[in-house]
Amino acid sequence: MNDDYLLRLQRYTPRTWATPAVVGVNVLIWLLTLWAGADLMSPSGGDLLTLGGNRLGETRSQPWRLLSATLLHAGIVHLALNMWALWDTGRVAERLFGNLPFLLIYVLSGLFGSLASLFFAGRIAVSVGASGAVFGVVGSLLAVILTRPRRLPPALIASLRSSLLVYVGVSLILGFTSGVVDNAAHLGGLTAGFVLAAIMPDRISWAETPGSAIARLLAALALAASAAWLAWRVLA
Image (cartoon, rainbow, N blue to C red; front, top):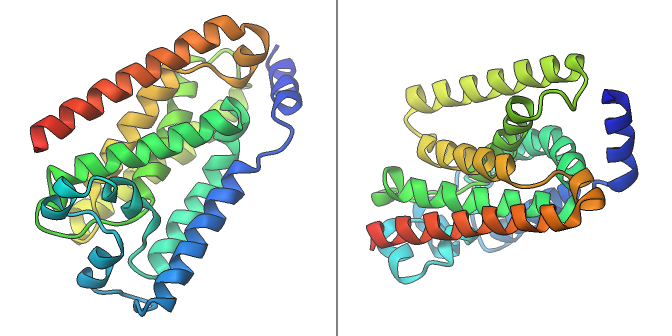
């Protein structure tokens, strides 16, 4: 049954094009920030804010910053770490959920990561980075492991569980100890990705039970819209 599930996933999502596309967009945006004058290793907060960074005072009147900030990075090391994590986890999640649903999880997780940041670091500092969205991808994989454990081979579940928990644990510890990592965005994205993936259908459900899949997708979107509206009302 497990092997058959993996074979069907391969058939229904033969190409994981969304993950490299997202990585490419992030790299392109970073190159554009260099062209605009941002520093290679550590661009200033002022530069990042001008380019679309997330900070409460500005984002209240320009909510598009909630998403633009997820495309900006505070230097090449920040970019490289996020893109490495995305490349490693994104292709697995994309295979499980399908190309477009994976993009939906990624974007919405980034949005909720930015919203969570505004309650903490983003009140006074400029928050940027794809880490909220990446943590959402990690959360989506954890949701699959915990809510659909019988579908995947036990060896794959064990491997994913250990690597994902280590990644989350190390990232959060570094965030709490370094003082420069936006853990609020991490936790906001992680939670959003987990909840969305727990509700949304996997790729096989889209192919075999499309009616149920659409209903589950609409339920996930309705919950996301309601939660985002409530968070925005509190911030406003």
